[in-house]
Length: 182
Image (cartoon, rainbow, N blue to C red; front, side, top):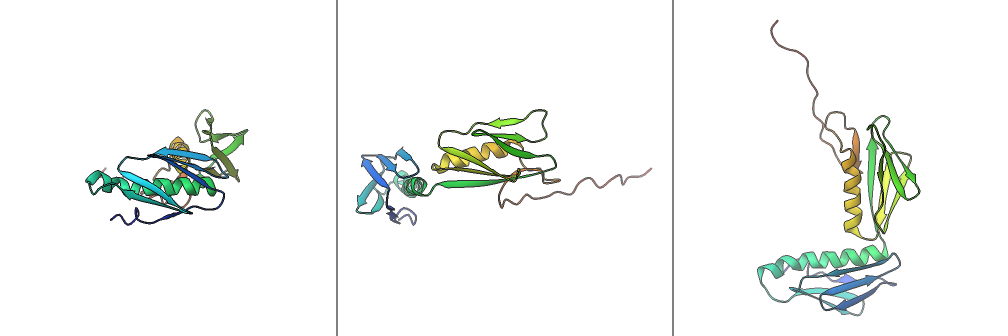
């Protein structure tokens, strides 16, 4: 039995879950999410608890059991509390700012990089070097943060670039100079 899949999901107050066959719709104060789950798993609601079980013991059913439970749990958590990813910008002259809802990055290129947030995503900038991506869909929050990081990933020599908060960038030694015969 999947250790993750057998754990029940507690539904907080102000969150409504609708199950229609393989489709799960979750509504909450932050928004509404829906997802079609594989037919190998069954989602059942008993009061304030959701339980994800598998139809049979086939290999695909076992594979989808834990995944489906995690997806539903992320939907419930997202519409009730939301998710956020923090990014740090390091480097001289590198900075971020907001123009309306859009994020504008000055990352040492000849132009500014403008990122338009998808629906349900908000950007917050703290002190020109910290960017917070927040929203109610964990998948979209993570993808948006990854796109921002891809503008200038951290390089291994000086560590300049955009990194996730708490990310450790392995540093390399630079050139050692000329050490050959004359």
